[in-house]
Length: 131
Image (cartoon, rainbow, N blue to C red; front, side):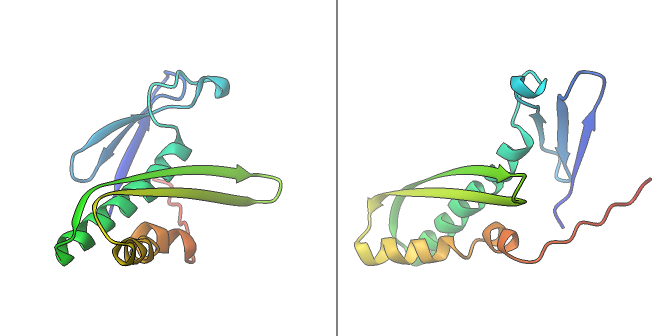
């Protein structure tokens, strides 16, 4: 199970996130929302989850196949329409290496199967427990 703990003190919107495995990062709101932009915004973190999972999934697949994939660059943008209660992710993927068209097409199919992609497209429930 993936787990994180987020702490915020009195400094406006600056948050420290610690993973269950001990990694730490800073999140913050952008300046136009009252933060100092000293870390990833919550929506940047959400977009980065899709981007990192996509890139890692493609790397694992290409390595298993023994393909000459030098680099994967995944750029994800995220927009939220509050009025329509709709969110849109736009994912751009670029490969470098000695790959033919069939391999590139297969990698794009695999990108659709990364666990975060499947999670975001699936049914999501959020349970909140007050401690």
